[in-house]
Length: 143
Image (cartoon, rainbow, N blue to C red; front, side, top):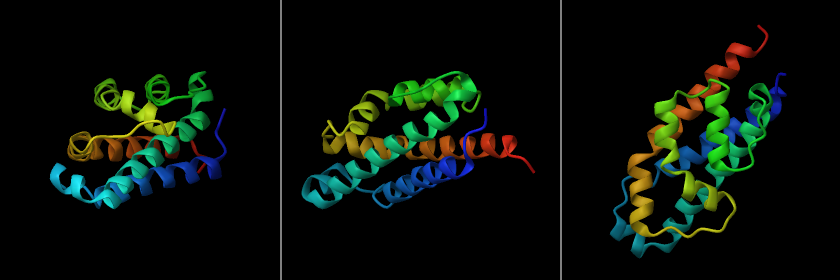
């Protein structure tokens, strides 16, 4: 079953925009995040948008893998089952899973060190995920 292209494109765009917004804060030190509450909120909001966009995107892709993901960890598992992500990338993204799940539900507050670590260590993985989803979708779209 093919996901509706306009739905998938909308969620993929939201995913990419959230990562781009997070990149604007990537070089911040934990100290700077401590002093700047507005930036902290921006980073938390960007991570929430990334997580929610990923969950919505994988809900559209999920039927191709006979899955219906409802949370961040199951979204990553869905993308592995659909052969969108290789297991090594899924493992790296899985490091973010506990926080991603809580952030996606709006129930987590991140410490400044957690934020700085996420910005340093995971943005490239988030971009790679979006690239792989985009390629996977392109392979399945009619020419």
